Length: 168
Image (cartoon, rainbow, N blue to C red):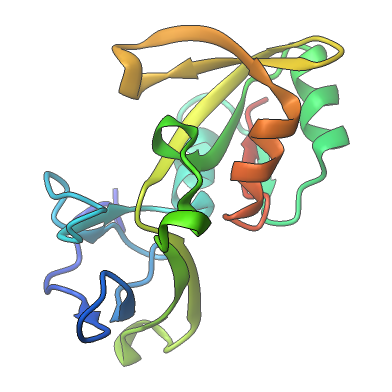
């Protein structure tokens, strides 16, 4: 599928830091080496438009997605049996405290737009909800499924502008 081939080239980094000043556009194409490390950073990933397009073309045509999705929308979708893909930090770490978050500018050939990022970017699928927790399907933890605090989820999710794809 177009956009999933990695964008060539390493990021332009802020000297003396892990921060990224310029790199690709994960809204339009996979950024970096798909076998690379986002913390490196040698690889990064994709954002919601590509995942939404794949969902719609592979059996979930009514799927919706974007940024600034409310927690209420996510919890209601999950409660109604619709899994939701969300962008959070790997291992739920506090990326801001570690200095792993920021904004880079995408390459000129991809629109030179600001890209909000975390160097420990990760996507998980939410599949259950209770009063205080959400059930997470997490490929990073050997495909495990576990319950996690809603408050901690929302804090990590905010680092990605509350980005989500509701599968339906």
